[in-house]
Image (cartoon, rainbow, N blue to C red):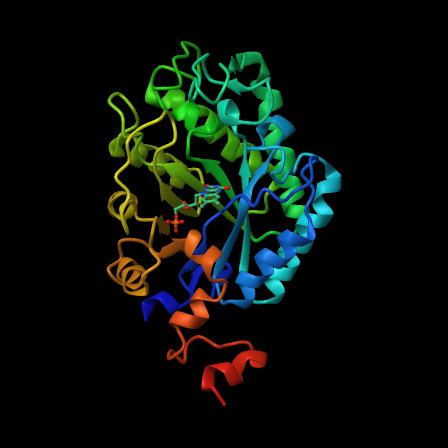
Length: 339
Ligand SMILES: Cc1cc2nc3c(=O)[nH]c(=O)nc-3n(C[C@H](O)[C@H](O)[C@H](O)COP(=O)(O)O)c2cc1C
């Protein structure tokens, strides 16, 4: 199966095309520190054969976390625990990524920031305070320092969270960004913060390691982001040196989303066809035949699994039981051969 063939991007070889999608565990302490849960959870999926593990949304500042129990990467003291996650995962053969995140108007606490004073959902979130143009430098510094800590924590890949209505997506989408300064209005201005974040991160992130961005390709609302807008963004990201694009959707404002197995694959396929760069598809790809067809058809290079890997940390070993290309941990061989 093509799903189990390795792929090398730059100098990093990923042993197969199965990605563990970033998923908040809500298990950090109130200061964002790694707990034994995280080590057990992520290393289990590495033992289970996943090619690339992307550690959950990890806040670049306290109010940028998505809850009071999300991981943080905003103190130097956070590095040690994160390094253990990276080392344990790599020890078991996975390539380890971390999703750097700022929740913006869907963040944590009373003092939320955003592009414009527009709530993400008046029932759940306060109206955010717009980031002043003069504060952009300190915002970029938070991303830069988070990238330095991710480097010190020995991750192989950074993924910037540019999806699901969080800070970077909210600047991209005209539904959340009504600014009239250099960070709003035209598509290029709305893209500017994301591209400046890429540049800031690259100042601390070694060129040989991987840089990924996750985007919401569409907002599912009139006047929201369209696939064409997103393709233009991905072209700019590729030109800026981003290595891997991860295509999700939605989250800017409440919307009706018709989700079914593979529903976001056409979005990833359209991006890949237009931009020709390594691409991750995600969304109910639990059926192995579906995951294989996504990769074998070339719609995407990787199939990311979220909930399927919560249900079964050994999803890869199980579906590849008959495939000699997938080694099982030696200690489990008797279970494979059932002797
Ligand atoms: C418990 C849970 C937590 C999640 N946390 C994140 C996150 O931290 N960052 C992110 O980009 N997406 C997050 N997601 C979305 C997943 O990465 C994924 O895109 C989504 O679950 C669809 O994939 P699936 O159908 O295979 O679960 C989360 C999803 C779940 C179920």
